Image (tube, rainbow, N blue to C red; front, side, top):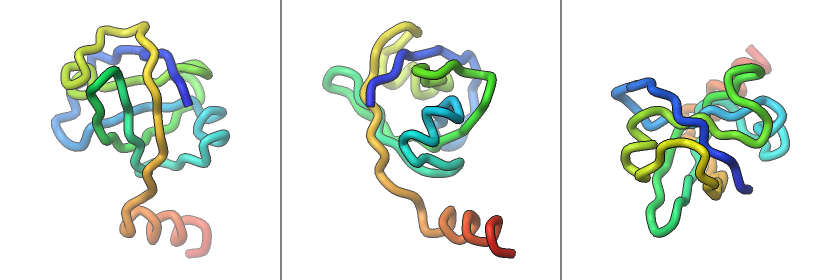
Length: 100
């Protein structure tokens, strides 16, 4: 799925983070801590999903500074995003939230 980049001047210092509007996350069946592959030209990176209702608009992807720098982005560019699954630890957290 294609998204327009919203550059977020936030340095996390840990895992690479990509923020999705909750509507887009639902369409792609993405949940917090899932992983996505972000592709821009010949570069790609794996990022952890964050979900928001207000911080990024539908059709946008909010990228933290580390991701922007790696992909050579400023904001406003179009990127391709592919879900690549979740870590087993994230799955057990998701199950516990729903059943514990």
